[in-house]
Amino acid sequence: ISALPEWQEKILPHIAHLPRPFVVANLFASDPARIWPIEHAVVTLKMVLKRFGGSIIVNTGPDAKNYHEQLCRELTEAGTTNRIVDTNTLWHGIEQDIALYHIANAYLGVDSFSANLAMNCNLNATVLFRSKGDTLDYRGRNTPLFPAGFASGHAENRLTDISCDQIISSLATLLNP
Image (cartoon, rainbow, N blue to C red; front, side, top):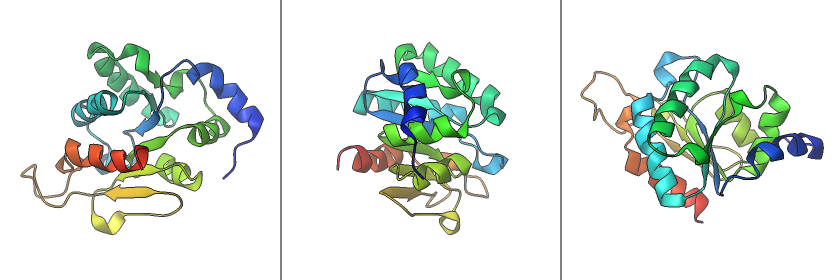
């Protein structure tokens, strides 16, 4: 999927001031089992900022507005205010999301419409899946991650069974080829 130059011109004023690399993050999916728990995501995203510098651009549809507001509050309390942007406060159109995916350096998030859109825009992606059978890996450089075991001690796989270190390592292969 291509981005028209005028789409990119609309979003650049909102992100041009941010340090690179730009990592687009999405914690939310319509299926509750595919939602990345905020506590785990906050720890991971703080590690992303520490390891790679740059900025986190939280991106998904309006259905995740409250969830992503909570994430941004928690990251802000962790002292990362000037390096976190929530696109729900800036725009509400798929054209802008497509433009973002052509400007960003990587996608990090859950198996969702946003992940599929990012991969179809050839954005390098680390995507968190609930199980190996759910994984998709196409277009561009992508790293599907899924729980290898039940680290959480629960009877089913959870995204928190994917360690922060696994996620950082996967993202490193995309940001530091």
